[in-house]
Image 1 (cartoon, rainbow, N blue to C red):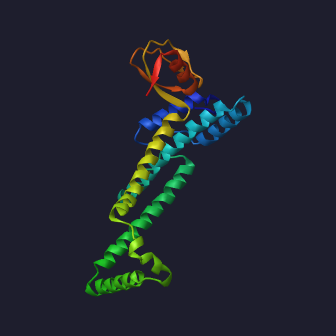
Image 2 (image 1 turned 30 degrees about the vertical axis):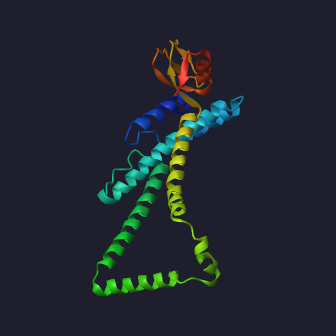
Image 3 (image 1 turned 90 degrees about the horizontal axis):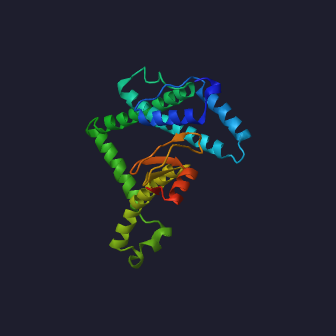
Length: 236
């Protein structure tokens, strides 16, 4: 892939391949420079900036997918000491990989130190237990400024406590749903075809179709809107 050959279709192809493959895909070492030049040209020439925004969104997804794989490889390498894990990484990604390995390795060493000290003997256990008891005793003593909070009349009921304990999980669930909604809404919409649609050129300059009744497709927003308004598709 030369610098002049980089197109939106090429970026989408890389994104789809990166999403499909479990391992990192192979990119040219100057991939980031190619993308930088491509995005700059689109930002300067695009009339409404839509093409630039779509291309930037696809590029960000590519980087995000690769980052997830790099984190996974770094965690695995701490156990296996695999020296070939970075062979498909870009130069900047190799630096990220090295830093992550150091962080995970340091974390594992600290955990091992704690475990070793806890099981090092009776004296050590007594010392740790005494220190923990002291800490618990200190933290359990009410401070003058906290006396008002100990009023039984103001203490939350068991039902309120249960509701509060459930709040973090509920919030996390909503955040996950929001993330999934954003992922599906970023310039494309997932639709189901309910009547035949001939082949057409999308606003992202990619070719779509022909589609038959029952087909599902991920289409650019504008094209999906047209099919929905015409009754050719329904949104999923």
